[in-house]
Amino acid sequence: MSNNETLTQLWEVFIRPSNGLAHKHAGSIHSADSEMAVQAARDVYTRRGEGTSLWVVPSSAIVASDPRDKEELFDPADDKIYRHPSFYNIPDEVGHM
Amino acid sequence: MYSQGLIGADDSTHEDEEFLARFQARIDAEEKIEPNDAMPQGYRKTLVRQIAQHAHSEIVGMLPEGNWVTRAPTLKRKAALIAKIQDEGGHGLYLYSAVETLGVSREQVTQELLSGKAKYSSIFNYPAITWADIGAIGWLVDGAAIMNQIPLCRCSYGPYARAMVRVCKEESFHQRQGYEILMMLCAGSDEQKAMAQDALNRWWWPSLMMFGPHDSESTHGSQSEKWKIKRISNDDLRRKFVTATVPQAEFLGLEVPDPELKWNEKTESYDIGPIDWDEFWSVVKGNGVMNKERLEARNKAWDEGAWVREAANAFALKSQEREQLEAAQ
Ligand SMILES: [Fe+2]
Ligand SMILES: [Fe+2]
Image (cartoon, rainbow over all chains, first blue to last red):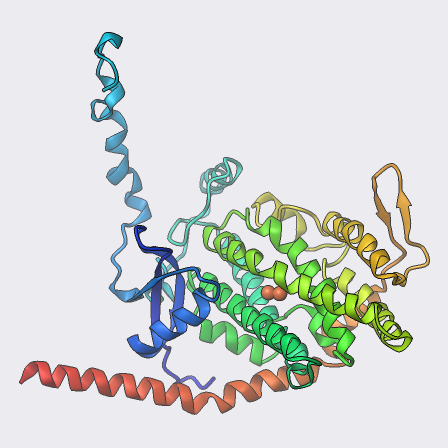
């Protein structure tokens, strides 16, 4: 590889295993453009009927939360137990609710 | 993130005792480590080296089998062999994408393979000289790889573990098609059976070497086990492999080329004779029959593919410019 060789763009691959299910992240792929990215994703990630639909997204387009903000972002949910059904006392006579 | 944005990014960590203890506590609690998490430099380096080596092994591993595609004895065997080789290429790509989550580009690790700096599994430096070798490779080499890879599905680094789950799902076909090839040969003429025995004779010991040096000699063993990258020791994996494989050889009516092979009642596994580690290290150091040819083949493929990569990138750039121009009008 010469040093002036451009890095081929990276794409994230999402697969819908079957209709009715959401697309799920499967891995990534290198490709210069979106058309070849779909073809490469097909060859690399769906050789055995793993999917019925593919999404490819430029990796650079994904905005991720910073793991250092994990506590700040997600811990506040921990003490909001009133968001869960078991927080509320309903007598058994009422039946299933 | 799975992003080239991470490549070359500042991933320095202040590794005081508290940081290392907190990291180890996460590992001990069986928490998975994900790409952007803070991790010790040593953990990152170990993973980059191991995953890249693993990826290179998948890629170089296509070469001995590629040698037989045009000479497979039937259309069915040819289709199976092509599908297996394609899987191995896929395994390499899953692993390269796992390595990229650690902030190293695929181009960089590829360059290290091409220059001879990076290692790959020594087993692929042995030649596949007869059709029976294709059977033995699937049965023994993929069999040993499966033994190695199953515990890696529980490795502490998330992307590596996930890649291994995909890989393991695909490996079983590889081993079975190899074993079936040998079954056919062993049910054939004396000459065919002799060919199968000859392949076993040549592939047996190198397959056992695939598990790496004895635990007492292994340099990366203990720290990797502490970090739960490696979950079962080299010797334990090797013993498991031998114990699973010997009855399969017996079923074929073939003889395992180890006069000291003996069932051990106590451990309920086989004890094996001494492994020729001089041979192992000699092949690792580049003196195997095929080391030079394998590297030449990879370099040739890379160099001859350069125009394709350049053309694809140039086309993508041009299309982008055209789109921008049209949008501006
Ligand atoms: Fe593989
Ligand atoms: Fe395989």
